[in-house]
Amino acid sequence: MDTLKVRDAQEVEDAVRAAIANEQPIEIVGHGSKRTVGQPMATNAVLELSALNAVTAYEPNELIITVQAGAPLADVLSLIDSKNQHFAFEPMDTAALLGTAPGAGTVAGMIAAGLAGPRRIKAGGARDHLLGANAVSGFGESFKAGGKVVKNVTGYDLCKLLAGSWGTLAVMTEVTLKVTPRPESERTLVLRGLGDVAANKAMTAALGSPYDVTGAAHLPGSALRTTAGALAEIAQPDQSLTLLRLEGITSSVSHRAQSLRAALKSYGDAELIEDDASAALWRGVRDVEPFADSGPRALWPVWRIVCPPAVGGTFGEQLSRESGGEVVYDWGGGLIWAALPPAVDGHAKALRQRVEKIAGHASLIRGSDAVRAAIDVFHPQPAGLAALGSRVKRSFDPSNILNRGRMSRGSAT
Image (cartoon, rainbow, N blue to C red; front, side):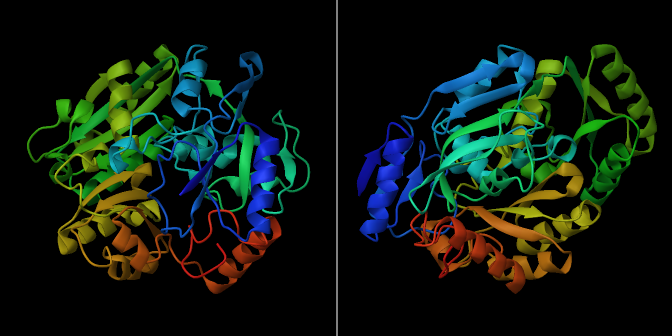
């Protein structure tokens, strides 16, 4: 396979134009940490962006950072952490789940995947924090979208389309993101032994309370049997954990934690975990550590299911019972990670029939090459939405050069 390692935006333009001229689709990678997500792509050419790794500008007082597309996410997070700032949407590190090197992802990969963590319920997703982008379209032309200040957006905010596009619309070369101050303190309330439905009700009550909950997750005891890290340290055999997070200034967090603890007394006596220990728990939830690639479920397909939070507990409980799989809940029940026993189609047909009945959607995040080739990895869209997506794709990449076929089998996307 031919790999072209570009050094600047002009070389990206040249590479895309050459691909168009040769009718050769190209795969776009940073460090390749998420290459196994999506449909298998038939291409012999790789455009590697890892050399585009500079921090172009960082203005902590203005709460913005501009970086090149291939900048290692771990380095950028370390930089903004040194100024007591962070990305509020908690970008997921897929290393544990996919079995890649920890911290190997890039900033553009983070945007292209759009996988937000537990604070998504409070702070929004990756696209909500993307202020602007420089990119090269499938015409081989550079363009700019958005800006470098929060208020510099008029008309349609074009750069938002790049978030979650998995590299099928354009090759990002530089992005500008909003950063926010890191909370001074955090507390996690831990409820033990709740069933999925009861935990769903507890999370709903917490999120509907006036106490500004920024994380609500539930991990059934069976899913914790072989997990490691901070979650393992507080887990007890076959006992579920329901986690509720509060953040802010120390005095406020302490008061709200005690008030929420009292409000949820009917669900049990909540334990309190503070600051660094609390943050470690939420990294485990964010990165779905119970389903780590190194564990006994390494060969199990892992699905990411988004559904209405109110029905998440019932849905997940039935799914795990009838499939023999395991589930982990985030976003108050609105996000379900499901590891299911090996099957020829990864359980795609049965799972999607179930999830469509509750107005949800399911995407395969981890699966073998054979399973990925046999099914639609991303949830098939309704005809009208699919047609709109095809028109957007053609407007950016009419020759279907960029990451051809990654998002949908047998189509232009």
